[in-house]
Image 1: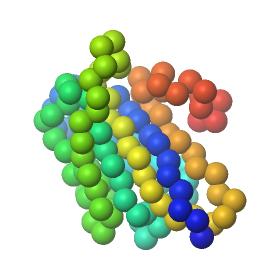
Image 2 (image 1 turned 90 degrees about the horizontal axis):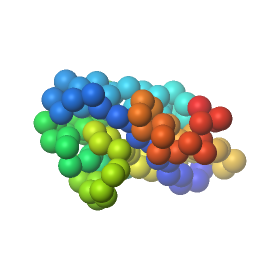
Image 3 (image 1 turned 120 degrees about the vertical axis):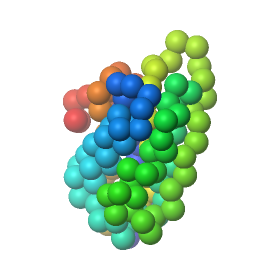
Length: 121
C-alpha cells in the first residue's frame, strides 16, 4: 500500500446550506466511485471554499456519508480577483495499492479549473 493524494472541486449554485451540502455530497461520492475507495483507506481530507460560501461546512456532508473516522478540515480558499466563484475544493489523502492512479474529480463549473483532465472524466 502507498499513500496517495487526489484533488477535486465542484461549483455551488447558491450560498445556502442545502446547496453546499448537496454539491459536496456529489463530489465526495464521485471521488469514492471513480477511485474505488473505502472509508478505511482514507487518511484525511481538507476542504476549501471560496469567500462567497459560508452558509455551511462542507465537512458536514462528509460526516453524513460516513466519514466519521476520517480527520476533516475546512478552510478558506485564497481570494484571487477574477477567480471562479462559489467553489468547493478538496484534497483527499488515502492508501491504495502500488500502481494505483488517482482520478481527480472536477464537477460543474469547476471543470474549467482543470481542463487538462477533461479527457479523463
